[in-house]
Length: 297
Image (cartoon, rainbow, N blue to C red; front, top):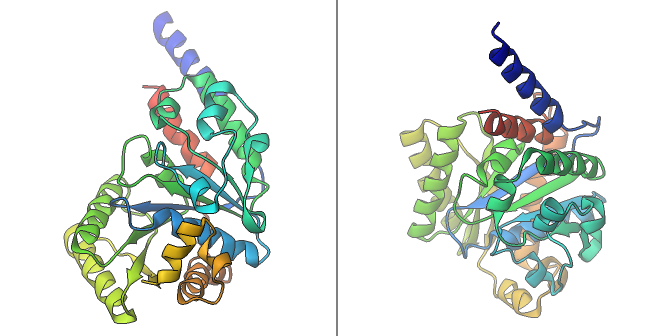
């Protein structure tokens, strides 16, 4: 082996060692919540699912990656002193940067400029990945509230999650945008576990018809299958909760939307706990693998 080749190999090995995070035995279940377009209620569903899990005694963390457009703070009527960008750029300790939400959920806001994360140098990535790995061991579930649509900056986080929930509404444009987003993901990895939630459904039939249209297109043109997670009715109490800046699960716990979000959460999480699942790489392992491939080229 030539000297320059040996030096290049040593440099790559050093980079791998720098980036590879410390792994812990406990693996939090991770879910990336996506949408093809904005305004379909993605963040509201993410927040209320987290609250439904907390009601069951689970420890839940929301990581808001809807950079620049994140509204978890707005939905609960609070403000965060630090964001995930602050953690990355200024090396604030992630565990100390989390904000407390209703019912004991924890969350961290996205801030502005996800490209800051994507373009960070290896040292910043190494710090962030080890910090994130340490935090994930303290939670049962981690929900990633992704930005509307997809971008190369978001893709590693979505593809690294154990499961993906795509939120749509019955509107034809929302269905088309959801299909486009899922197409982008399936092209990247056809083995993904993707479920569909239909928000603002006028009836159960309306929800099932919406899912049927979307799943048929995905199966026909992409050769992939998706699961129906559930639907949330077009409930005026949801709009009122947004105005009041109180999650609808708290504002109106017995509303149709609240009962529906609990059922959707059960379908996505509780029932899965009783089923044998194939062993999948931990979220942090997959994310660090994406990072290695990017930085070693």
